[in-house]
Image 1 (cartoon, rainbow, N blue to C red):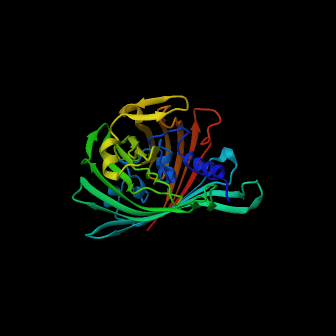
Image 2 (spheres, rainbow, N blue to C red):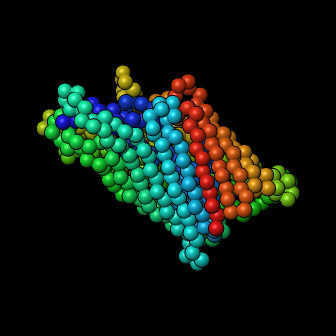
Image 3 (tube, helix red, strand yellow):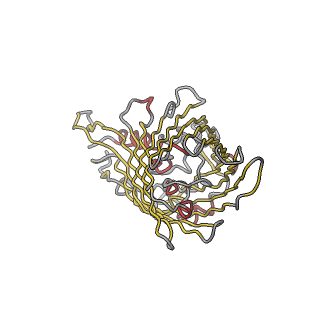
Length: 377
């Protein structure tokens, strides 16, 4: 039988991909790979993209952003994940969009996270061979514009998580987990207006992603909630000259995890299980209780927010430089880092790069780099 400690370690590695260990009894979610920002452009802007979402990766940031895209795109992103661990982890994202005149714009994506090769042992420590762990998701999205200023979008994805196999010491079978999740978003963009030497535009967006039932990996375990994320933000683009050759965009995202677990007492035993989706969306605005390793602490709404700030400069829509800042409360993930990026566009081809610099030494996300290839048709 496979030891339970190995399964739990593997699961915690997956949770640690997007948040530092917080030992939370309330608020822990499954499949955190769905929170990994997929495109190098927004990743270079402090993970802020809900109000920009003007390429195929709007599927992740805000499907409403697909609505105003009238070309077709394909984008591929690759990143070695947690490079400091040298653990053979990598992340791949394939996304595409296609516009249908008079109907709207459709998008599709495949997300794959490789968690490396694991060693299977029995209760005595006898090695029983190796197995690979991975998670993937695939889905479709749709954006529709009511007019030049308002749009809406939605999406649906299938999620599959294979962390381990075999049996626990209790005799329970370890199975891959699966679920289906939905996204809903809207976006507003102003008419261009004069500001400084050229034109400017203000955009705002909101997206609620990964709405669905939880995932369980064993026969008798309660479901762990999906990482339902609420995002809202704004972006301001301005021309630095009269002919619009040099442009600058400021962006700002606020996001929070909407999933919650609740305490359930049955036959004298206390367990935690995922709240229903509707209940979690309503209760997630309350104070969050979390165990920090020594005591229970409370996080108010502001302390639960994740904040991203971004800045992007374009020259003649051909060359871009980007930077950004991302912050989480120390008791709510404790991620704080600077981001840098660059992009090149030539004809139908585009390449984007981003680099993550953590403000904390020896952080698992330190020196994370993403590369994206974009094709416009």
